[in-house]
Length: 320
Image (cartoon, rainbow, N blue to C red; front, side, top):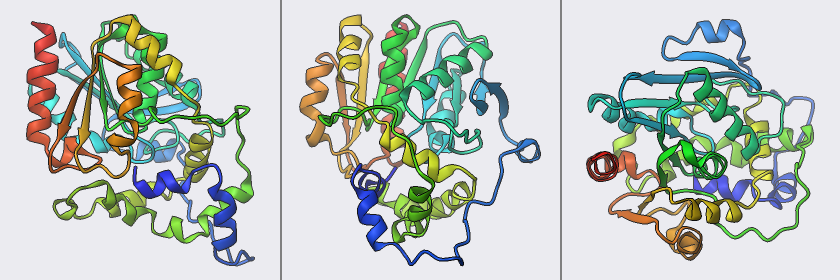
């Protein structure tokens, strides 16, 4: 998730976009052309699908019989492939590894629903149930996935072995009095698709890195995701329905769950200095690891250091 996306989906930007977007006329061609139907799912050679209440969920799950399981929740718009380095590192070490695409992203369905933390929490709960996962999990959330793991840990603290945030969203101060749920109009969707911000969104993904040079093609991979019908609706709805999680996070602190947090030293998407006071206030026992020479995705840019802390210090340390 880029800094640009955070700015783009703030509650007042829709009015600005409507004033600066391209002229809307009959020549508009919807860039979302791919329907995630049965034929689409058959075309996917990796992973598996499971039908949950709100739709089909794509997931990858290996080392199912391992005692220790790491569950990875991705961020705002880039799906589960963002966890490649961490997922394969977990598998190679013999740990159970589960990653999936949240609704509206990647290969999972894009249902016509309100995209809020309740939807994502229910999806994760149902996925664990469908896969017969009853043991405690190491739950890790990247960026916007930090909101999902906060809500899940609040509701099901007994399911968590370790709670691990990676440059998380959800620790900002939200003071607006908003009546949820907030709906999304077709005009908002069309306006955004015709805006310059939309046309540069894939390239903007490179802004997540401190140094994007080693990640050639990252933006091109994202372009495929943008072709799925309902993608823009999911993004807008998610941003408009991002309620405060302050109470949930304070309750997590009281539950005694071990909490850890990674942060890229040069993250300009979710700046540590902007939310550090809230992080420490809501989770006073959190152990924070600031990763040097990394932006918003420290698990990718500094995978060696990240994995050493994650597996040797956090997961192995807690299991001894």
